[in-house]
Length: 320
Ligand SMILES: Nc1ncnc2c1ncn2[C@@H]1O[C@H](COP(=O)(O)OP(=O)(O)O)[C@@H](O)[C@H]1O
Ligand SMILES: NC(=O)OP(=O)(O)O
Image 1: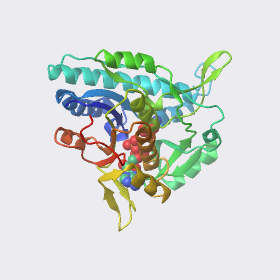
Image 2 (image 1 turned 90 degrees about the horizontal axis):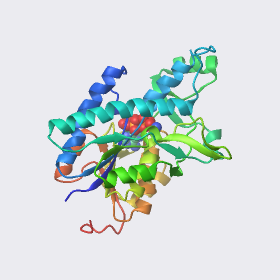
Image 3 (image 1 turned 120 degrees about the vertical axis):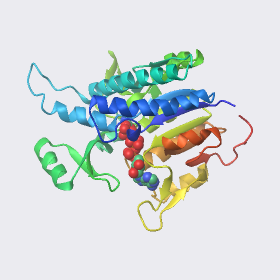
Image 4 (image 1 turned 180 degrees about the vertical axis):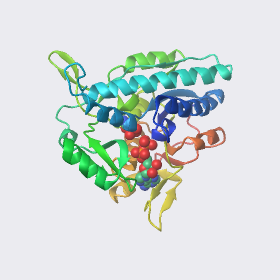
């Protein structure tokens, strides 16, 4: 039976080794073909995606935009720009792949804003890695020059970090809901959604990058998804990751996952937000499942869910 699936696309599904516009469109073409295979199997897709590498690159480009005729744009505008460019590439790639499979459906990307709390403590403590990976030496040189903050990112190199408040509301959700109900494939809350706050003058952007895994979890809760699938660079989540005794997690309950979080098993800025997003979703969606896996692994969805599959302790196997 077809399922309603919220897919959160991670960096690898958009950008691999070639960060040019053409390079990213090539990767997205392959991603779209894999996603359309799910539509062909009768599943309903609600798509969201990250923007960490892209928004970091754009932010770095703003450092050179220092004149009145070429002003630097704030981070919330950079999020909007990357949401627009990735949405543009992905929407076209999806529609092309649907056409190739003779599926009479269309994909629409929606510029989506997420409400955040201006007093979210995340504004005082930047944790979200964006942009390229640098060596420690390169990172320290840049940080000294422009005052930005860099951290070591899960053994993969040094990356710039920015504030990452939690999404409280998806402002355009009623539009997304309407499109989903009418059979459209949607791309929304891209890059975690454009962070905004409510002011007396109305909605206003605020400089931050929301974690797309939290925004996708909120979206999955709102659309009442059967599955939240977070696609990333690994087939499974591991405990003792990177150590000799690392162990992959296949089927885990929500309680077990929370226990691993309490043991500090997951790295902040990479795997921690994904597992926390899974917890948020499942706590509000008792009879749904969440999966963290790679894009290649979703082809197996036809037979069974593979990857790290998480469900509530009292999940009813045949309820949906
Ligand atoms: N405990 C863990 N289990 C598996 N992978 C981990 C773990 N901790 C960190 N990682 C690394 O984090 C990556 C996922 O984070 P990231 O690349 O930031 O996500 P995204 O795919 O959304 O861009 C994985 O591909 C892996 O390299
Ligand atoms: N906004 C966001 O979380 O993007 P990534 O998943 O690409 O880091």
